[in-house]
Length: 74
Image (cartoon, rainbow, N blue to C red):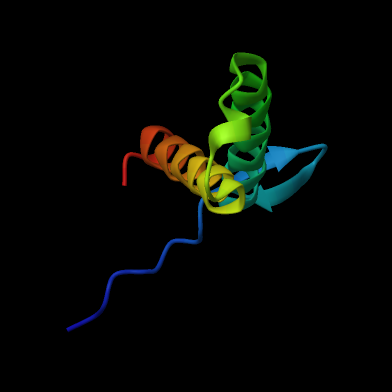
C-alpha cells in the first residue's frame, strides 16, 4: 500500500518568496495584543489587571489561533 504524498506547510507568497503562514498569524496575534493593550489603557482597565503579562499574552495567543482557524479552517 502506498502512502499519499505529504503536502507542505501552509505558506503565502510575499515579495516573491514563500513565508510560513504561522509566522503571519503570530505577527497578527502580537498586533492584536498591542491593540488590546491600547484599548484597555484607554478604558482605564490596564491599571486594575492583576497579571498584565499573562492577560496580554493570552489575548495575543487567542488572536493568532483564531486567525489560523479562520484562515485555514483546521
